[in-house]
Image: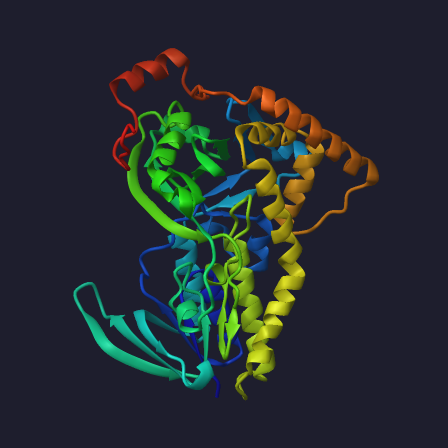
Length: 444
């Protein structure tokens, strides 16, 4: 019987383990922090709920309103009621990763995967990395004790252990560029939290990120406010987060930081994602999209596709798949999603390079055709072909927006006014205190 170790218990690892366990394949799912999760905005597309059988109970908020805020504080409201008139089914799911990850891991375990709360410290890869593979790990027994020096031998490894993947290092998968993300979870008074009940915000501008965007996403009883930037600008990350705070401070008035999170995020797929009988999925493989930074759906999808290929090639665990067998998963993945990653990479290079381009980007988001095409693609992961007149309109709109964007791009920024309290009341509150706790950044 085929023996498989899945290292990493996020969406990609859990989905791999679930598929393998359903087929009766002996599967171990390793996760070193069962009570924690990767820092993440936590937005998922609607199609993921049905495709991966996620219960609505793990979804904190159903966002139907998105506010895009430009460098000059031009606001564009994207309202799903207007994009999909007469329908209330469409939404962006907002959830906490620790809740979703726990649900998906436990489901894999219920189906037969062996869940190991442990840290893999060393991987012996055998001759020419072809296995069998010996994992050395420390298992956490409870909060007070752990058992070191444990090991297990397997025939195949799936690396779902994130951007700093130990499996990727063992298989010499090669490096990739990555971004640094930081996020603060901010508890808000009920008055302000009411505003974020079904609304999320995205801020663009050099003050919040030179190559990405800042966000405020609602959760169960708090909001997640964060930003990201490429690693070469990593030294600026705290000041960029302060920029998000400054832009949103009148909406986050009297907030209190309850948790600070930071993590690297891959910017493109690794040079090698399958070596021997080792395969990478999720962030370990580099499956995070440019422009939007979306990774949860693609992590889960890659884990499922990899698991399905293992089941098919192993004849439900009867034989050990070859390296060529595992690479069929990559061929299917690249064929299905390669174009998506390329297009979003191009969009990021065009619209995230200067404040003028960002002004153009936000202006374009006010067009209903652009909104419809964007949300059809995001919510349902479908590519909708544009009609010739739509293509012409979009081209002209892009050119006009870019020209106007350069004229509008400001040298300074004004805080976005609160949509909850009047200006006088907010200023009075801010004079007493602003957001409590969280990161500190030097004035320099």
